[in-house]
Length: 104
Image (cartoon, rainbow, N blue to C red; front, side, top):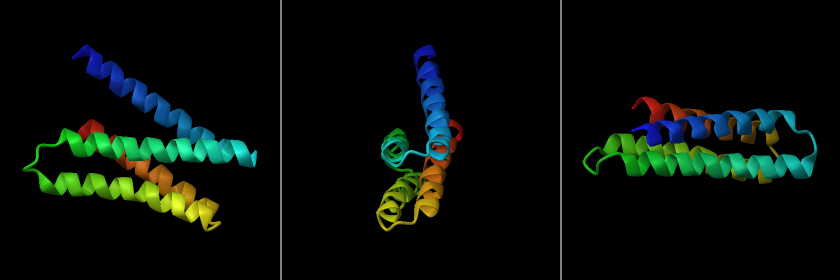
């Protein structure tokens, strides 16, 4: 039980730092690295959410997949040169995924 709590705390801390860096880093190559890391983190959290629910709970699993899709939409928007919208989609994916992982 304690190991699971430590994992949750580490994931929350990494998410907090990643989202903060996403908006604070101004150098374009470094910002792209932070952006892609945060997007991968959003997809990873979505994967954790999908696999943590039993197979008969379909709606929470579909919602978790939708949160992962927000991260993919954010990456597509980044390469369509809409940086602000892309960052918002990535942030929403990570925050909503963490909320679902911790509280549902």
